[in-house]
Image (cartoon, rainbow over all chains, first blue to last red; front, side):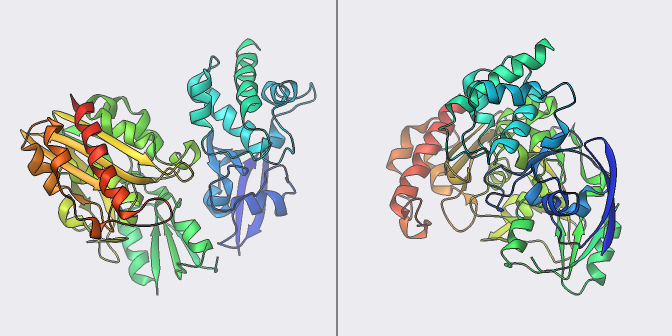
Length: 157
Length: 264
């Protein structure tokens, strides 16, 4: 067992892990941050997307020990006392989810798109950039609308 | 995944030493194939030597008419690099269409070619551009580097350090991708360099390779007129649930024509 320490959603955390402990396992099982989901466990579905040092990664395909010293943001780090993050609010307003299982990964990937491509996103850009996130309920239509609306709202705030 | 010794190293020399000390070690670059392979228990190394902290393995530069990309440079970094977009725009586009954004933030050039998945994108570019793979021990030409399905010329303790791509006069990559995995069902990279036109093919057969029959039909020109008449060895093509051998042979020619047209 090794000790890892990292910053998760602004707080310093540490814990003991095996070498093979995945980052998503560490978040869910050691820290109790169960908003990050495990869908396929084979880096296809994107339910486990989080940000490590400001970039989106699939946390089922990274070891916890690789994130030693990193700055990690999960879905739990977005809302604050004032309310939901604009991207979360946009998913709610646009009915961008049904069962909700893929939503944390969708939101984290959406924020990565905004970081790289800005606040005015056309539909084809959003669809292309969400290739690594799978939703089995919605048919994506409202997710795309939500990402566009959320990006715009973030630019206005 | 079976437990292993995790070894974080800060230099190529330390990585080599860690490998020599390990009973059955493996190097890990971005881990986007290594970790899924270990989860499936298709690999169970005693030691996993993580190259993620080796700063000397990252970076992009243009020197003496060559684009040099460090082995641990991520696909996202190659895709977004102004230097790559200027020097070999087809390579930047290729990198920007590997996997998905989260995978591109971790996956690396060195990891891709050292793994040599027969459907990976980079090997086609390395071959068509006549690149040289620099390792911790030597320089290996593209054609000698890829030796078979998931096989390369690398020795067990040899690390890819960078890849040097001669700047082409024109280049384009066309991929017919699997819509789920975004791996190439067939990918063809065409490059004209120093008056010679080379074709790199991935996804079609067990091993990324030069399309010599296609090159002969092109005859050093970016004119796809003779491609339809090329006869490809269907019996050497991969056949699986995604595409039959006959369909792959057809796709190789279609992707070649599209790549040649995109070069113009």
